[in-house]
Image (cartoon, rainbow, N blue to C red; front, side, top):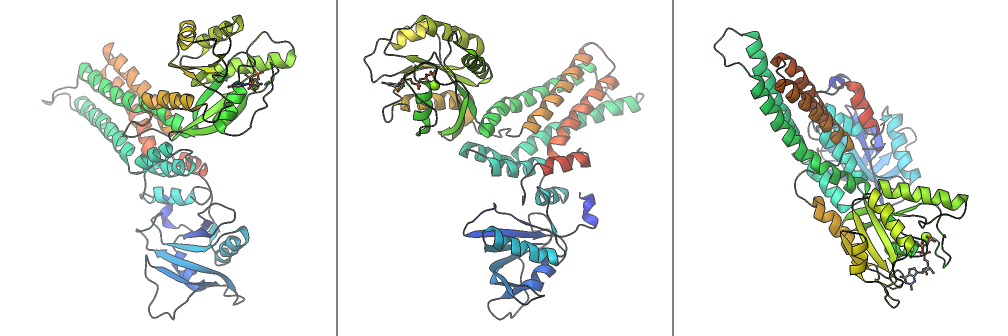
Length: 465
Ligand SMILES: Nc1nc2c(ncn2[C@@H]2O[C@H](COP(=O)(O)OP(=O)(O)OP(=O)(O)O)[C@@H](O)[C@H]2O)c(=O)[nH]1
Ligand SMILES: [Mg+2]
């Protein structure tokens, strides 16, 4: 691998986030990495022997032009073939802060290194066969992960689990293609010809395996982007208060006046390692003005696109006509619902039985948005609803949208291949579809990727990765 490997230049970039901190790491990768580092590094102790690979040395970086100290650093050199990128690398632990790090990078630039583009270190690792694309993308996911669970999923992907399964699937399709081709090319030999029956069966097997992987894609997306939870109910039941209660701070305006919230307010929380995106909405009712009407429209759309809808009732009052309308609107728009009986600190006029008779929900929970710990039951119900759906299931979770998309494309090709085989289309025509499916799968691990696509994928990475 690595057509670029003929004459790569040497690149430099910070590997740690910008900003102030104790330490920062600057990476230099490429054929000149070692000689550049040697040109500017002065060991603290008298150098008895040349610097060894994979040893950390304490010392100073000195500007050869001025003879002035640039920073106090720890230098580690990695040999070609034994580094993250597969090239010779120098890693410099220096003082953090924009000025200090900038000076180190600039020093290497003056020696001829080029500032790395976003994702360029990972791209080199990919081109040098150190990582497959799936694994490289997992690094990016890991860096961006917003929850422990997402980080775990990315780590598993980094281990190569997903790559192996996808590669296995692709290999079996390639095997089928080879069988088909042999019987086409040598029809007179004594080979058992591949029947359309056989091709259909094999396609269906592969589809089942893809379905299994894809069923985890939804979970993966939730882990990556957060489970979207819309908070719905008529005005004044305490939706914004619940948002604030769950967040533990006063994010949304709360008043005793019905119709307070107009816009959507979105905030993120993590429950049991799962990221949730809470969306507070305008109270649903026949609106009394243009702004409120727009708010109600937004609310209805938010309910429609949410993964889960909280249906909030005020438990200190019996169910009203407006509540019933809200429940009808939610029933039509969102299948995963959690019912909330709020204001449990006030005398109850409404039971969970009455509420669940009016609207079936995964659970009906009691809350008080104004008491400390008043939302615990709700938090538990949300975490359970998602985790019960397999969020913490072992195995590879597809956390990457690109992978899920390619698997869906491959599945669609296999579906038409199987259908064509059923209709008695000649097996060599069926094989065109199978080949297309195999190519989509190859794009996941990077085996059949076109170079422009490789560039595009890596350019979405963060700087210094
Ligand atoms: N006693 C009690 N009062 C609550 C509770 N939750 C909310 N309230 C009060 O109910 C009133 C309305 O609360 P909001 O959070 O603004 O209600 P909302 O559903 O967002 O209302 P709109 O934005 O108008 O749709 C405020 O006076 C809150 O203090 C609760 O659990 N217990
Ligand atoms: Mg509100």
